[in-house]
Image (cartoon, rainbow, N blue to C red; front, side):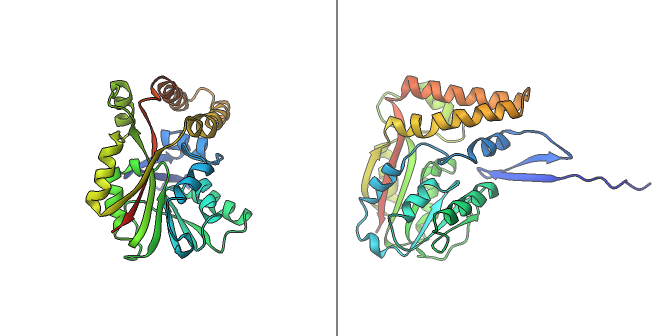
Amino acid sequence: MTMPDIAFEITYCIFSEEIYYISIGVKEMEIIDCICETHIGLERQGPGSPEMTIKALSFLDNLNTISRAVDFGCGTGGQTMTLAQNINGNITGVDLFPDFINAFNDNSKKLNLEKRVNGIVGSMDNIHFQKDEFDLIWSEGAIDNIGFEKGLTCWNGFLKKNGYVAVTCPSWLTDEQPAEVEKFWVDAGSGLDTIGYNISIMQKIGYGFVAAFTLPESCWTDNYFTPRAKAEKALLEKHTGDKTVDAFIENNKYEVELYSKYKQHYGYVFYIGKKI
C-alpha cells in the first residue's frame, strides 16, 4: 500500500533553547506563533526607547573607534537602527526568528543602512563569531531569556579588550520583592535579581562597571504595552475562538496589570560594562 501524495508543511521556531513544532498538516496556533505574529509589526519587541538607547551610548568613550558591533536578540531592529544612526562601523543583528530578521533587513534597507547593518538568524548563546571580534555588544530586552550571567559569560570572548557591553535586563528596584512578580517572571523562564547583584556578576565575569540606569515607565507603557495591545486586537480578530490565542492575550493583560500594580518594585535596567 502506498501513501497518496499529500501536501503538508512542517514549521518550527526555536525559543529559549527549546524547539516548538508548530504545524504538521493543518496549522494550529501555538504560543510561539502568537509571540511572532503579535510582535512582527512592532517597532520594538520589548520595553525601551531611542532616547534610552542613545543615553546608554553616552557612557561609551571613543564611539568613533567602534568598527564592529553585534546586537543579540535584535528583533526587527528598532534599537539597532538607532545604534547605526549614532555610531560608525558595521552592526550585525542576531535573532532566533527568521521573520524578525527578514523585517530587520527590510528596515535596514529602508533607512539606507544595508551596507553597514545586517541581520542573521541565530541563537544568542550558540553562535560562532571570532574571538575578540567586536568593539561593542548590545542587547535590549533579551539577555534574560538565557540568563544575565550566562549571556555575559558567553559573549565575553567575542569582545575586544576595552570593548563595551550594554544590555537591558528586568531587575528588582527595591528591597521589597513581591512574590506575585517573582512567580510571573520565573514562570516566563526568567527571574529577577537586584541591580547590585547584577553589577557584581558583571565584575566577576571580567567587565569593569561603567553605568546602570532604570528605564522610565513610558518605555513600558507608551512604547511597548500600547502598540502591543493594538497588535493583540488584530490577532484576536484573525484567530477568533482559538484557545491558545485567548490564553496568550490573557497572560499579556496580566503582565500589564502586574506592572501597573508593582512598577515601583521592578523594571528594566540598562547595564553597561567595559571588558578589562
